[in-house]
Length: 344
View 1: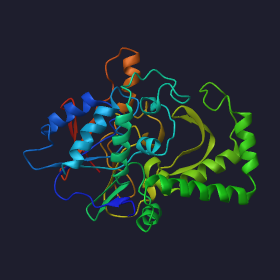
View 2: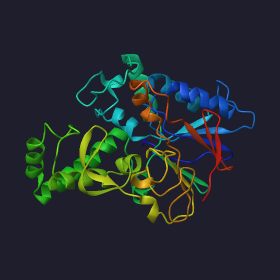
View 3: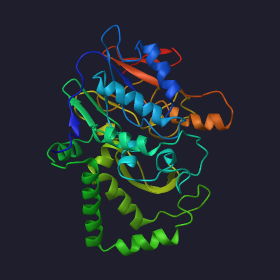
View 4: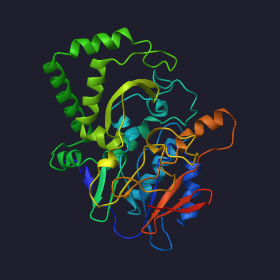
């Protein structure tokens, strides 16, 4: 039986919840504000959709995954995989996931203070994540963690892989063969060895490593799982420090070329309510409650709750809140009760 990478989106009214990153208290508060009981029932018969990145960085990823699992299995919710879930499924150590793999591993050097997963937890978590799609697709609404890329969707829709990991490893192997054919595999190795001690040091000064950049770009853009869950990327003009390491590729505003009329809701991109002068990156000129893209039909519902670990370390008040996009009303509702009408 092949993996169901693409599944149809719920019909009817939905509340689409942004990246949670282990913040179980924020999730519980938001569900209460949205009118859901503990079983996921809602007076207006609404249902939930989660955009992925349920785990990592926050205090209790196990509890968040358990809550979402119960809602999905009860038919009250849908959930797509984010890049943080992909890391668990592919045994990839990254900043913030030491709670799953055993902290602190070599990429998890910050004090996240997350509840560790037991062996029993790890088993049901992987089983649950393996059951989830990468994309929800229907004529009225599409949901994906980071990027709607039609080529990637079509590749996976026509595939017959029995698991996400099998598919992921197949695409990585194809890229490795291409790099060998290009004759740059040895240069990549040499660059990695030369800068090995600095690639995770945010204070290091590193030049753009061209062969490594080519590898990173191909690993990202020729692997549909990574494209959909981590976004479209281009080779950077200079190295970018993100996720605990220096990267040779940078994010691309794929929505500027999204020509379809079907609305897309995403997470992943750490949106916030800062002023235009304070903002940087892809959302510098996009208002915090605005739809965007070629047809103003793409919306990001990730409002940076994953940064709360930093507020805890500083003993500061939380600067970000978990939000949900209520459709068809196009209303944004936060765990603290604040509401905004989105606009195009």
